Image 1 (cartoon, rainbow, N blue to C red):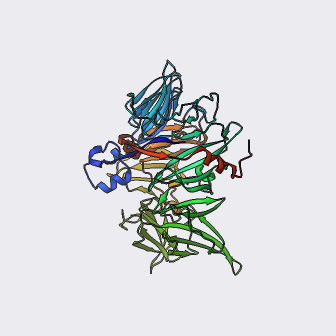
Image 2: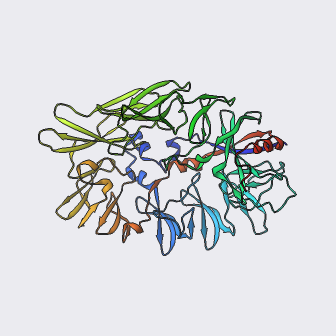
Amino acid sequence: MKFRLLILSSFLVIGLSQRSYSQISLKDYLDLENPSVSFDTVAASFLSVKVQNGKFGMVNALGNWVVAPVYDKLGNVSSEASKPYKPNWKDGILIVRKQGKYGAINCLGKEIIPCIYLEEPSYANGIFSVKNTAGKYLNLDKNGKVSGNYLIDPGSGLRSVNLSTKYHDSESTHSYALLNKKGDTLFKLKNSRYVFKVLGSSEGMTAFVMYPIIFGGLGQRYGTIGFLNQEGKIAVQPIYSAKYLTGGRGMSAWEYKPAFHEGRALVFKGDTGLYVDQTGKEVIDFSNRPGTVSIYNDFNEHGYTLIYHTFRENNKNVFVKEIIDTAGNTVFKLENGIFGEDGLEFTDITGLEYFFAVEEKGKTLYNSKLEKQFFLARNDEHYKYSFFSYPGDFMTCIIRKDKQSGVAEYTFVNLKGEQLFPYRSTDSYFDPFTNTAISKQGTVLTMTNGTGEVVYSCDSCHLDQSYSLSENKHYQFTQSGVFKIYKGKEVLFINYRGTLIDRFPSYEHVTTSFNNMSEEYQKYLSNPEIAEIAIRVKQKELDEIYKQMPWKNKR
């Protein structure tokens, strides 16, 4: 059996100057150091779902409608969706429904696929699959035009089936089938009890997973992962667990994607992580380390990754973090370092330009090459210091407390170690990006701008505890310029201009959640490039592999 799969991958070569600052992140804004670009440009790049008259639309952080409130559904946001609303953007695109018919919009609010289709389209890699009134499936590009690019080679003998999470083998005249609800590519071979799914390519290797079909659906928790080489043949046998493809391991934001980095791929045997090379050899395991070892990350672009292990020694728990290279050698070790600063901070390096090491003596910033950038001490002659930041933050809040008077003040430092503003009293909140100060005198909360003008005031109100005015809560900052303010049980969203964005009778009713669209905008502007992956695996070979699987008898 031989078939070919055309995967569309995206690349982007676009600078901020080409974007004309129409969509920009806070970090980009700070890197620009361009006084002609105001924070308004950042605020305009943040969008949140807003409901009006029972219909969904989206506003930016300036309070302006970007997506008109005319939709019954925005991505995965509907009347049944959990709150706050978080639409599932993909490449800057949302599938929408209006008056019972489906279409799509982009992150600028433009309806790129008109809402004329009775069935919900699928979207993957720059291509929409829609079913027209004649019952035929069409491929449309991101401009709504009929595209000649296919997710599969139309001559491969594959057919499209019902866009469902379950497989229905209602027609047996074709050898293979395709499910494509979420851009996945699943093949069910004739008379088989499993599907074959392509996950993506890296360093010339193609990851795949085999899932058993159990009661008409995919047994995702039982899937096994392997890799094909450039010739399309199995190089790494599918014997590794796929259970973490949907997240897990106690980190809700962590997403496992099997891929090669620096010639090594992270795989799991049950809950145990290890690394394999491109021949399938298990080159790095951690059996020589004491206790339980946890791994969450692939190697970064410089060939480093982070592992954790815990063990008992002298009746005490020992917690160790190590950064290792692609040979498994320890290049950085932190034993019993502080894993959290009040539970808010931990070390990570994958996908980040930098990471923090937090110890009793202080906090050190390293870049992804393990080069030391700066150090913040916990104590000096006059002050005791506390630090607050989240992984991925490009600011750290420092609170210093006078050892004699006990007076506490705070400031922020950036990734260069530069102080953003003079130390201020912890009795008020200051946002360094919008120059907004929020303080409370008596029962009145007041918001002032950089010129000292009062832009908003509210009696019997208080700032959300994320921006609490107490000493130990100045670790947070708003990237959108929108603040959450409580008036009794009522929740108000007020921006740095003093504009009311939305209000809710209680916390349980809140639907507002602002997200920056700059990355989605870049994805939307990217031009698809077709990359061809050859799959030369015989069904007989896969059938034999299936027979060795522990899930082979599940129905």
